[in-house]
Amino acid sequence: MSLRHRAEHLAFVLVRAKWRLLPESWAARTGSFVGWLAGVVLRVRRSDVDAHLDIAFPERDPTWKRRVAVQSYRHLGREAATLFRMVRWRPDDIVERVTFEDFDEVDEAVRSGRGVVVLTAHLGNWEVAGAALAARGYPIDVVGKGMSNPLFEAELDRTRAGLGLSVIPMGEAPREVLRSLEQGRVAALLGDQNAHRGGVFLPFFGRMAATHRGPALFALRKDVPVFVGFAVRAGRAPAAYTLRAHRLDVERTGDLDADTERLLMAYHRILEGAIRDWPEQYFWQHRRWKTRPPEENGPR
Image (cartoon, rainbow, N blue to C red):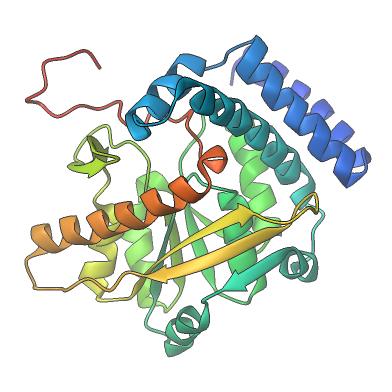
């Protein structure tokens, strides 16, 4: 653990303490301003955001894309402020803040005890989505990717544990997710992360994107249902969300490779539709198209 890690963590602790002391509406405004500062003044990954919006919305004019880019930074800042405050939330607080839509099938699948895979994405607030499922009473395990700063990672894991989430490190997912499903639990995963190695290339907004096979393989190997869910901001309250669920009804032929691609393509279609509805709530800062197919000779 380096001195830089400790300095970053100290700054994080001080900012978090300040945001926790502020009234909720002020914390949201402050987070929005910090996001604006990062995207407009400091331009953190701004070239990536602009390039990604060009890929996803080539038909849109530059003014619309600039507005969405700035709004996405503001949204990210607000959700960071929310995450800092979530540690104080009780299950009842979360349920009051989240409106569940189309969850009858999910409830039935969880009650069956067979195990359920829930795919979400970097849309809205994925941490709120997991916490809402735990508050609803689901026995849930979330797969978490490691962070460069181990102190940040430990803080995030403690926050998740306090919200009723059990964390599976990504490196242990191949074994632990299957065990979770065998025990009849809900396994929640982010399906829109760039796969550096071993992924399958599938179209996402018309451009091939390296996609992790794991979420589909887990569901297919254990023959469990798959749902896609996103917690998006809704209403005027500082932290009010709508959590929607979509069942992935994809034919399972027994051909593992073909079924994997079919399931992940269905996931991409649902995700694309949701992003078109809430483009300002997507995490465009993530380099989703970074890994390129071998046959492409252009720069990464």
